[in-house]
Amino acid sequence: MSIKLASDVDELAGNFQLFKEKPLFVAVNELAEFEGRPDAKFYDLPVDYDALFKAYDIEPTDFRELITNLKNHQDLNPYMGAELLLNFATSADLRAEYAGKIPKGTFFQLAAIGMVRTKDADGFEHVVVGERGGEGEVVWGKTDADRVDRFGTTLLGFPPGGSIKFQTEYDNGPVVDTMAEEFEEELGYFEMEVKRVIGTFEAYKPGPTGIKIICELQTDAKLEQIQSANITANSIYRALRRSGVEKDEAQQELKERRLPVNAWEHTYLCGLPNDAAWLKNYVKLCPQRFCGIGAGALLLYAMHLESERTGN
Image (cartoon, rainbow, N blue to C red; front, top):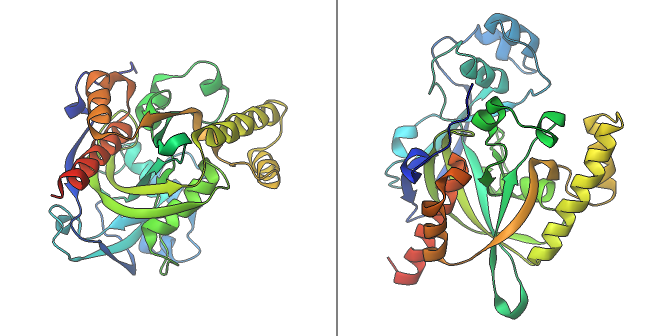
């Protein structure tokens, strides 16, 4: 596989939508229907992941969790206030889709991305951006094309972010709960507030694809503090892993030191000016530096800033 980078932002993301009102999510405790799905009995809790991997004839992995599928995705764009119904599939189904065992576009998996505004000197605000990293020597040494294509490794994205895990109940809703968990795991133990759920876009390759929900986050941390936590955590984590320490043990060490356990997801962090025109021009001038989720998040956030400024 050769690495194909974007030459235009339209190749990275589309279907942008700003929410005019707060979206309404309702979790429906049911298995998603899709072509090529194995026997429903394998999905009875606890899910029989080994049986699913065997049914799909794919290699088993340790990534085993319920994923959130947007059942009525047709009501999302344009969003007119309908209840958005969430049901579930599994991480095994996602791998099967990637392996070509079931049709592409089978799921409307929801994931959330936070655009983090920092509090810096003289009231200046940055938006936190990072180079997407990954696990293993293949990333810390040379990066293969498959990792760039699948995860957007070495390209720019925005932490925190992650798939919305399926639950029948959420403390503060699926998006806010996801952002709270991902912020601590990727950026650190700082105060954070979800200011607003901004809207959605569809991400294209390279990197994760599908519908992404964007949130505006505010932290009391300065950019330098977030960068310091990332550098320290990455240094400790890499040293531990290279010495033979298992991933879970390395993450536990970081947790005990109150450092972000998934800092490795971004090899470095920096800040961009919190200005709509600057952000829009940046991604348009160098689309080859971005994965789909990174470019889409930045452009949607710039649209949000413009909307706030004009009142539209």
